[in-house]
Each structure stands twice: as C-alpha cells, then as structure tokens.
Amino acid sequence: MKYYYLLFLVSFFLGSCVPSKDLIYLQGNPVQKTEIQRINNIPYKLQVDDMINIAIKSNDDDLVKIFKKVESVGTGGSNSGSGNSGQSFNGGGSYFLDYSIDSYGNIRIPNLGEINVLGYTTVEVRKKIEKELRKYIKKQEDIFVSVKLSGIRYTIIGEINNPGPRIIYQNRVSIIEAIANSGDITIVGNRKKVEVIRNSITGTEKFVIDLTDINAFNSNVFYIKPNDYINVIPLKQKAWGTGTTGLQTLTTIVSIFTLITSTFILARNF
Image 1 (cartoon, rainbow, N blue to C red):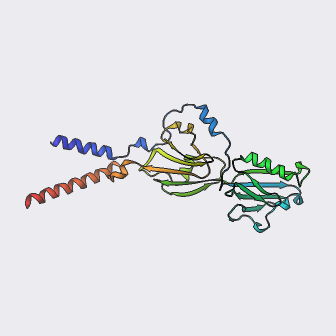
Image 2: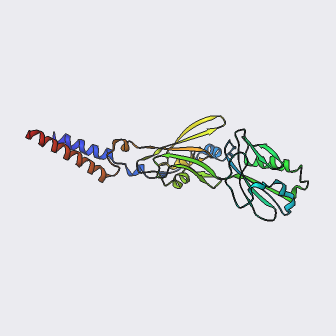
Image 3: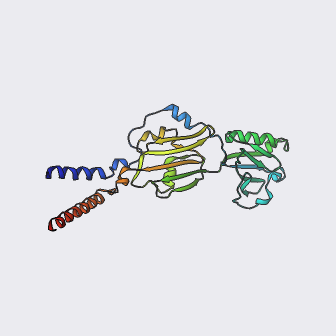
C-alpha cells in the first residue's frame, strides 16, 4: 500500500508541473512550405473599421491644400467615424490623413468625396485616389500619393499578462510580436494551442497555432491581420490548482498530506 501511495504521489507531482518544453517557443527545425509562404505574402484586403493612412504630397502647396480637412489641422487627432481620425501637416504641401473605413466600406476625402475601399489592397486604393486626383491635377508627376495601414489593431485575451486591445504601428505583425507586446503568455497558458479568431469578407474563421514548434513560421496565421482576436487558453494545471512549478506543487501536496494526516489522527482520538 505504501508503494502504491508513493507511486500516486510521484505521478501526481509530475503531472501537476508545467514541463519546461511547454514553455519554450519555436522548438525544432523548420520545414519549408512554399504554399503557406505564398499565402502569407498575399496583400491584405481592407475591411470595415480598418484604419488607413493616406499621404498626398507635392512641392506646390496649392496643388494639394484643397484635400486638407480644415477641422483637423495640427499634428494629430483622435476623431472617429468614417472620416479623418488624425492629421498632420509636414510643410511643403504634404498632408497625412488617417481614415477609418465605415460600415459601407467607404472613406471620404475632401473634394474627392466617398471612395469605396472595402476588399481592396492599399495599392489598389492608391490607384483609385490617383485616378480621382487627375480630375483636379493634370500634371500627375507633381504629386505623390501613398496609402498604408495605420498599424495593426488586435485583441488578445486569456492567459496573457496584459490582455486587451492593442495597436502595433507596423504594416506587418507576427503573432510572436503581438504576444510580446502584451506582456507574454503566463506560465499556465497553453502555447501549443493558441487560437486566432479572424473575421473576413467570407465569415468568421478560427485557427490554432502551436508556438512551441518552429514550423509556426509556416502557419497562415503566423502573421496576424487587423482586428484579429488572439485567445490563449489555459493548461490543465491551472484547472487543477496544484501549482505551476515543482516547488509549488510539492507545497500543495505537503499541505494536502498534512491535512489528511491531521484528520486521520483526530478521527482516531474520538
């Protein structure tokens, strides 16, 4: 009986700890998967609520000033909605505008009016704006237009040290960067089954990625997209409540053993 009891305690001790290999990111040797790499390199198509930055520049201020939003003059802003949500003027005829795509998939630029950008890439949007500008500016070489995402917005929940919505001001963000930007996964977070919930034009999709495997680089969700939800589910050790390290687990087992022994002694005395 003592043997079985000891075996049970050892098994319980080992099963209650979080193995170190479950805490290490990107283990092993990578396997090349050209198809996934191709998918990851497909240009992102804009969706509702995405923020895009539009810059219309010229050496001649008179050529571009009519596209300036008068109510947002300054070095930045935080207006919301389908119009300008932030603007800066860089001198020499250069206006930078941040636009939020409305529920109809439109943005509205002064004098150009509403432009539908839903489902278009930033390159395609740039070409649409340039086409509209030709109605006002005949010498196309006198202006320069750039369109890019105003950062990647995502929400991370679950076993993460700093959950909540975040924005990383880059055009491309990996899930590793997103997690690091949120304080890393807790010790009881399951790095092998991180969920990514993504809304697209075709509907909502859920993906699972193993961040302990080097081949996570080949996953089609290794690079997150705007408005992704990242859910870090807990390990079973958290549900057991036995501790996450060997010392914590040993302390829990000793406490349980002490309680059982005390109860047994008290029961025998009565």
